[in-house]
Every structure is written in structure tokens, then in C-alpha cells.
Length: 414
Ligand code: DSN
Image 1 (cartoon, protein in one colour):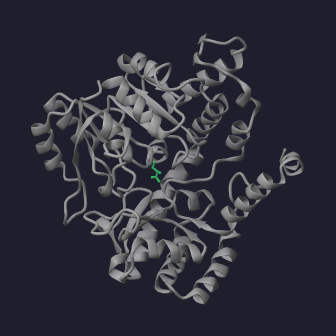
Image 2: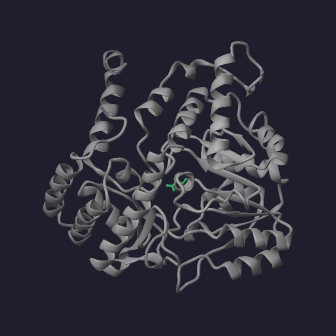
Image 3: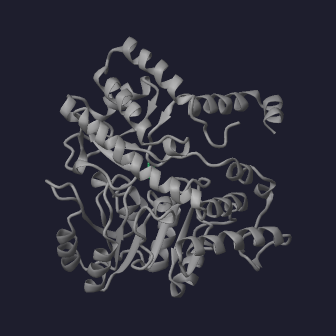
């Protein structure tokens, strides 16, 4: 297959080969990325990409959908069992589309939503004015406590009482602590709101028993499938049975056309993998690695937002080293460590600069690294941050990073 691509389109083949080397040589600490297994990649690259299958299993608008039906039914059944939910839609192409469909299923444009502030850990689709969510719905937001840097649940309750949202959204892209879903349910019940949980970042931890599940509390749950869950790029919506018809029609025909059956096949494979004892160990290791990395960075003198982590990620405040998030991201990259700048709570700097870096352990853990290796990774990070602006020092770290990284196999790469 790869040989065929190299012959027919050497430019694209070269870019793919170059990314295989990049993914192998560098340490990936982007908290939302991971490595899919060979089986997931094989399903993603299968002939199922050729098939149109608008509709749902047994109710398609095209002939020849018997295999698409089998694949989508398996994906739905597996994800329902994995998360112990009543209903699932596995067709959303992305997390943003899953969130859009969840809003369409539960609200009318103009309705009120209470979501987490983007610069305190939320997501664009949780009400940013530059996103469809902030344009179609009226949003109020909640954030974290200034001292503790953990969700201010009392403020969530007060704002909910005043604002009277139809829906409360929780879930985050840059929040390192456990989320108290029971408390959110209590607040939603008090004000008569529905509760939506966007569990994209932590879905794999929940599947593997390393984070409490939102399922007993949420009316609707959205998630991507490619982060801690280690599936293909894509998304899904889980719900209680009474909401299932609305969710299905919000996805198709309201928002999407033909589902990507090849991606749904790969989602089914990933759901199968996530149900194994090996995946439970993986999820536990992601969290223990994050704790080990945060501990080693703290020992090295860096300030970790909220003092540590309970999940797969941490936010490092690099302002204490007189650096911006952008400068730290650039120094890390020059040293062969991939991470992203990220706002920290109450960040005085704009989103393209920031005072922080977000670090996550899902990808390194997929390569088989353990808590002991996190000391080595922390050493590289500390050295790179302290070498900002010193190109030769960063190049020397890069060489050592590459030699270290190459000892760990990248899943999906021969
Ligand atoms: N882009 C994702 C992240 O990095 O967290 C969120 O959608």
C-alpha cells in the first residue's frame, strides 16, 4: 500500500514518511494527541471509505449497505457496553460537530447555555463568541478559583441561579483535576437545566476506570475518539434513550451527510481495544505518568497550575521562568519535544502568546513509557526551558531526546 503511494504520488508519500520519522524521533506531549494501533489505522485506510451510507443501520438511503450496517451496529453496541450507556451515535466527524449536534438535539437557537470559559480550560464550542456556539446561543461562563485554580462550583451554582440556562456544559481541554459530575447534576437539577458533559479529553481514562464516569449524571455526553481513547480521528454522542432520536436526527439529516464508515469501523476497533484489561492498565499508567511528570517538574522548580494533576495533563506556568508560553513551546520544539502553549487561569497574555504550556502523557504512555521514564522526560523539559534562545544547547538536547525516544516503539509504525 505504502509502496503504491510512493510510486504514484512521491510528494505525499514523502510527507507521510517524514511524519513517521517525526513521530518516532520526538517526544509528543500534546495532551489531545495519541497513537492509534495498527488495527485502527488499517480500518481507517480500508475500502469502506468508498461507501455512501446516509441514514442509520437498517434505514439507509443507498443500496449495498449491509457491511456498513454491520460495522456501525458493532461500533454502537461496543461503545454502549464500554461506557454503560443507553444510546450512542458514532457518526460525528469531529468533536465540534458532536457538540453542535448535541446542542441541536437539546436546544433551540437563542437558548441559554452555561459553559466553562475557554481561557480557563473550556473549549471553543462551549460558548466562544468567535464560534457557532457563541453566535447561535446565549452563553454565560464559569471558571476556576483564583487561589486553588480548581472549578469554582459555588460560582457555577450562583451563575446558574441568576442566568437560568437551558443547558449546563462541563468538560474541558485544559483542566488537570477531576470534574465533580455529581455536583454539576445537582446544580442542573436545581435550575431545571439539562447537563451535557464533553468528555473528549478524558474518554479513555473513563473507559479504563481511571476517572469517574459522567454517565450516571449527564443527559448527553460528547467525545472525540482520538485522544486518550486512542481511536481514529472522529467523535460520538452518548445519551439516555429518550434523547436518542433527537440526537440521531440532529447528526443526520440536520448537520452531516454520509457517515465515514471507514472511520466508524476504526472507532469500533478502538472501542474493542478499550474494553481490554491492557487498556485499563494503559489508562492507569497515563495518570500515574502525569503525576510523576508533574512531580518531577515541580521538584525542578516549575509551577504547575493547581499544584499537580489528577488526569492525563498538566499546565505549566512558565512566567515564573520569565518566559511566555510561545517561547517555551518554541524551545521545547527545538529540543525535539512537542507541546502546545496554553493560557493559564487569569493569564494576562493573549491566546497566541500565553503564560503556560500544556503537557500530557497519553502519547508517551502509548509508547510504553513508565513513571521512571518521566524523570528523564522532565529533565529534558527543564533543560530545554532553561536553554531558551541557546540554539546549540537546544540542538544537543534534541540529539539526546531522539536517542531516548527511539528506544520506545510507536504503535502503528512498523
Ligand atoms: N484541539 C483539542 C485540544 O488540543 O485540546 C480540543 O479540541
